[in-house]
Image 1 (cartoon, rainbow, N blue to C red):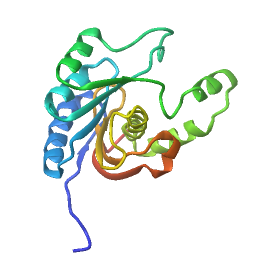
Image 2 (image 1 turned 90 degrees about the horizontal axis):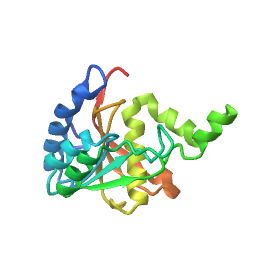
Image 3 (image 1 turned 135 degrees about the vertical axis):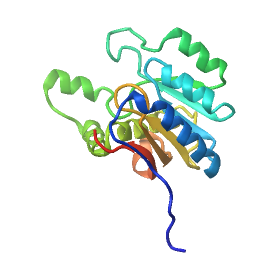
Length: 191
C-alpha cells in the first residue's frame, strides 16, 4: 500500500488547556510507534513534571528557557518542579535557544532580523509550537541527550502548556537541514 492513514489531534485554540489531552494522546502514539525519546519544552517546569510522570521509563528531556531569557540572571524553572522532574528520571537541559541566540540581541538593539529568526518565523507558519518543537530538538541533540539516528517526539506549546507534538528525525544545529519533521501528531488549528 503506497500510503498510511493515521490520526492527528487538532485543537481548536492553542494554549495550556490542551496539555493533558496532548500528553495522553502522545503517550498512546509513542507506545504504538515504539518511540522512546521525548523532548518537551517547559518554562516553569509544570509541563515538564507532567511529561516526566506520564513518560516514566522513557528518555525524557525537558528543555527550559536559558537563564536570563526574560530578566538578566533569572532562571524561570521553579525549583520544586526541577526536583520533581529529576526524581521522575527525566533530564533537564537549559541552554541558549537554537533559533535565536545572539541574533535576538541584534534585532532588539539594531532593528534588523537575522537568518535564524527568519527560520523561526517561517516555522511559526504552522504555529508557535512547531517552532518550539524544532528548536528544542536541535538543542537536545546538540547536548547529546537524544539520538540523531532515530525518530523522537517533540512536544511544545504556544505560551504556556503544550499544544503541539511532532515526530522528528533529529539533527544537530550544525546540520540543521538534515532535520526532518516526519509527522504532525497534534497541533492547534488556529494560532
